[in-house]
Image 1 (cartoon, helix red, strand yellow):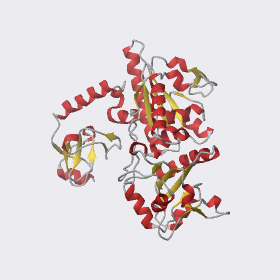
Image 2: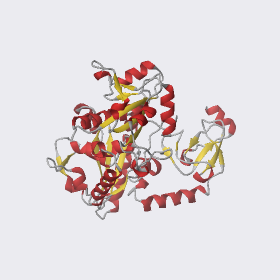
Image 3: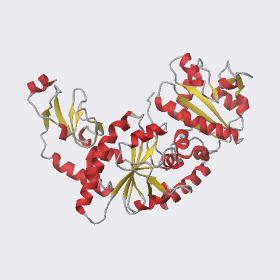
Image 4: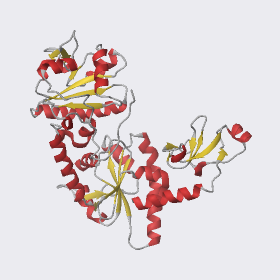
Length: 430
């Protein structure tokens, strides 16, 4: 099983799971054949409910919206999503919503299954029932975890049957219930309306606050002072190692962009707002103390709103807002890694221009080189000739487009990172 998260941010790209033939109403017999076996007509209760009974009849799920949850304790994205899903599930249950989840484990052994299930308030397929778990994985063509397949109680429309529940939960939370096509269309329309009317002010303020903090943490800077500027929303945290590694690079690029704009004149400006995911106030203050820009106050509710609004599933994340208050790109971090300060103002037109420059520059590069520290010959490749997005083995930054690649072992470096040597020198430098 491939284990990866789908990070496609297109709100219209919600994945419909295969129906494997004609849809049928989720009757007791259908549910039993789907979730049970010839020797089992029950599901395991959550461990919290086990004091009363440790089993629930599968037939008791008739008439409910069901989420079949494929997950595993050993995979961090599953654990991260699990925490989010628990919050949504408990809120829906407290509201009396007709919703249930059935956990299908991909854990390595029974101890891992039991440990993971301790925190789950929903039902589970027994770990020992390998045939049912395999059948469910095949039926819903599960290629990545976590995966949440939503089943409607009246399963009669092919276009209203199964959706990628992980995407829906991350994007809409409890508002996604009952996960019908009509509800999702309504949410997408509302999402589009919000994006169309988006301004930097309504993004960064709330009824109780119309300011940001500067580096002193005590001085308040009006959010309206950002109007007309290009603004980067930097979602990051001190506990996150990729964040800690990226922040010094971003500081350097930020200062170079600010200096270039100041020298250019004309009133154009760039600012960054730190949106903290730190775990406590002292960590926030320590981390923010290294940054030369502005920040939302620690644990301000706007931070969570922004993460949900922009469908942020990974940090660090740099979202670029244009002078008109509209979103330019959610890939600011990648553009910084690829083009440094030249990425500003991060628009499609600028990126297209940089890509053309890269193509032109590649024409004068040697077709192959030996690189200090690597023994094999490196060949110049592009996305059209075997290349693609990569992490440079020399500077650990992201790369795209052209690269020098080892066709023997996959080693890749940016063209700018090549330190050309003779074949013998490359071996000695190792």
